[in-house]
Image (tube, rainbow, N blue to C red; front, side):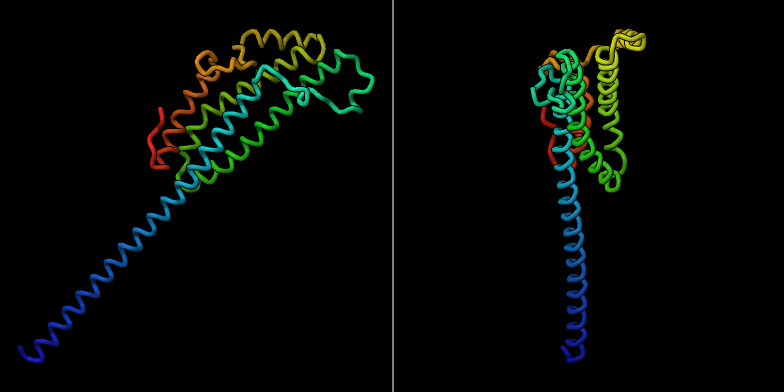
Length: 208
């Protein structure tokens, strides 16, 4: 083989090697990008799932039938000289206010993550949360009506609130049992599509 032929062959081999290296580099970059996307999605999904369960537990806590002394306690300055009945009235109102405040903190944490998910994945997940937010609103309205009907004096307005309450399903107190509590059942049913979506981002199947 002549020197010119060897040179041409060498150039061809080198060009082929360069192309192969470029392809390998592109594939490596693509794999790296895909890995980074998966890692970011997985991290966001994990944080959303944890925040969702904290949101759920905080909402359940609002309905807990037992109230602690710390929840019922009001400021000493406010309590000074009040009769026992008034202390109990204000204590119950205070307890629900504290519970809802704790729940609101968990809801705000979740909403911040859902906003991030909207930016990355679109609004599909936020739409799946709408039935859960509807149940949350139902509970808020029921508690507000319950307090207005029973803890702000026996007025005509309170009587009207009691009539409205009578037309709604009683979801004030949690039965502490997923199988016996209708509100819990509705919540868990609405939660399942969320779990399926988020676990898909985690690369995991839904746990039955």
